[in-house]
Image (cartoon, rainbow, N blue to C red; front, side, top):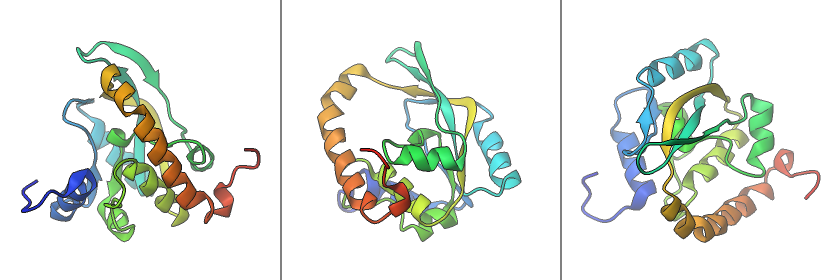
Length: 178
């Protein structure tokens, strides 16, 4: 992203979204591997089911591309809403979202240093938009063990910040048992 100042990850993603000419925004990292038909399959589900966002399952891969585990996500809206209380219900690099929905939510919160996607999912659900995850694995998601260890405390901290922001305002998301 060409910018006269450092804008951070959320700022860069927001800037790219504003520049996008498509009615859909797809998210993926440069070291992940997408199924060649991923976007076509996800757009078909978006349109046929009249959804606003579609994610998918993924296969986690290591630094050299070896598959380690299939990561399944909650499939329907009730399961997505229930999962949101505890963790992200979407694999961020697997999603495709309608650009108009992303814009109506104000994009990613540039004030958050991490977990901007988790915050977006809370706002998405609170706003009554519709989503699902496909059970098909459409992404090979690179998960570096060293990077995950270094980021784990920071991610936990930002996870709690995002949850505290939203759970107090969203009665339907407050867990019945803590």
